Length: 195
Image 1 (cartoon, rainbow, N blue to C red):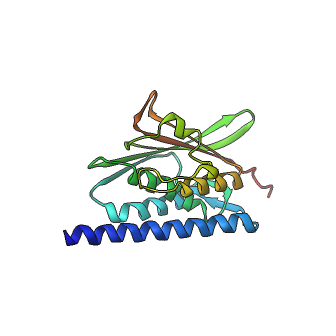
Image 2 (cartoon, one colour):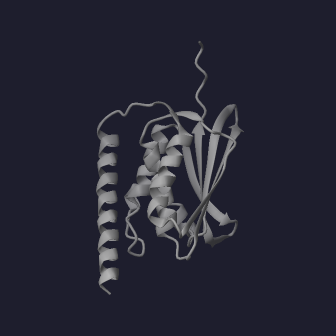
């Protein structure tokens, strides 16, 4: 009983820290111009995976399918927070004894623009269609089954806008939200510098 109480206190402290951290980052976004520069997506994704995996070594499997060892986009270090927020949500909103997350990377073309597409899918509880429409909207933040306010995904949306990227969420299994979520992130490929 005491171990459970200690674990609950640790979880609440971690959630409180993440909440304060996210609010601070939102404040930075609102009050100043953040520098944007070419940065390696793969490196920041690896760091985010390590952050999430460390406390859950035995209960979490993350499969990565990418043809890239490195891929540079215009962003900044806060891109790691984008990945961490999505991965942490995949863990928190998952009742399975083994949490499974898949990350697929590819380059796609939409219109005349090239994008890096990252698809991050999980085997969690999923997101109902009505919530999908408001999940990134900071005006509709509310507690979801005691598991959070949604500030993390609001931060994700704001950062993706800063990076000129796009984000959406779909059902992992089309038509059955209860089988998990699939977050699709699109990052514009920077124009090559002339040397």
